[in-house]
Length: 577
Image 1 (cartoon, rainbow, N blue to C red):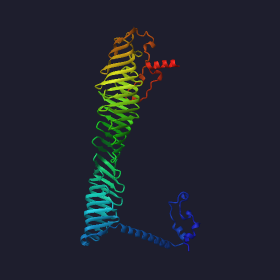
Image 2: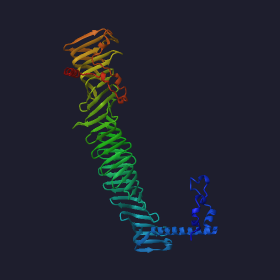
Image 3: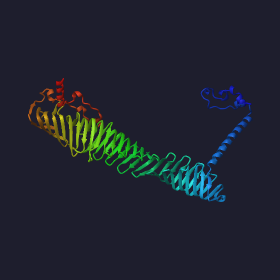
Image 4: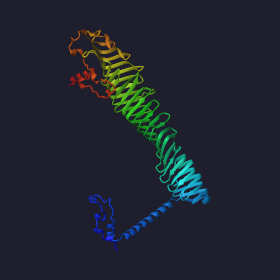
């Protein structure tokens, strides 16, 4: 016989069974309230019969829950397996409590507990154990100590004095350890030490997760390895991979370098680090900084991404960029993406930018060769310049500029196919202009002193030119003055020429081999005769400050200076055609 409810199931829908608000009936089934009147009608029973049914169901579910609780409680009970003697004196130890002595062994689920003596509190389901405490969990984790309090309901062990926890090749030593057996978490405080392979880690407190092989250390953390030492505020360590995760200010120190970072990781097995925050690698001579550093201590290579800096303290040089690398073994370095070089000398700083900068050591010396190539531009208060590429040799203090080089100094401009600057005692001593040499200095708003020749050598004292030797096809135009008044235009040429300067102005000229010259009154010559062939004034491209070195400058091809070889090649080409 069917229950009355099932007989009427097909004649009732949700709206008839649940008294939902009409405006919500199409959108919600909950919340709802059950009408006892409707239930009574459906089941066709009295209120007393209805409560009888409800009581029966409640008793059934209570019985199931009580039985489940009983089984759970029985499963969690700490069982005494062995002892030499057992004392159950209720007056002395309390009702339900036992004093146990000699070769004591307890079992709790999959864990065995050994000790010399113990008190068992059956009602509370916990024990206090003393002397040669030994816990074995799943035949893999061994926990030792002098004293133990073990709570069966929570599976938590509080071990004190001479505590040692062993899990495979990991040994944890401390005097205060709490171990949550269910969640497999050991927590120590008041200083602890962990040994794993060649590494020994110490901290004031920490967590150990045996199942995931992870350790978390906090406060005065040190990791000792035969090759280095790690000092940290916060550190996480994986015992299988032997990788230390950096979670706070951390130093990694060895005989040759110091690593610092506040985020990242260090692979202690392979000597590899990835540093992610406020990081640097300090070598004996160089300091490497950057937002992200990938550093291999074995190969010595540090690869840097974003805000890279290589600081050479010996040569007072800083190389910057958004990408680069440094090899502390070979001393090689490279920088690109906003690459910049800064050199501090005599109270002033040179700022140089190029597409790529690289530094390579000169064998058997402490000096380097620094190469800057493509779109080179530099700024210093007393000198500026630009070219396609540049090579600086620290050994002989020479700086060579290639492909359309330009140097500006005070009111002068120097150009050639190649320019080499020679330094002496960190001061510019000579400047060599090779092939198509041209020097221009502004005399007035539209008047320019000019020196031109195949090759030139300029000599400086206190960073000012006092003499220029012109070798081959020497030509000059300059404006002599009487006081502050221009008195004429002097045009001269010869095979070779020497020009002496006073207060940055031509003062005396010596013409050698086939000399010729003429002095003209000022403002008499036409404008085209006041400029030597190949004249080009490039003041527009001159860096005015250290930020201008990042402005891209390309000299228009129509204004580019032609060389004697180019004239010759064009002539030969016309003859061939």
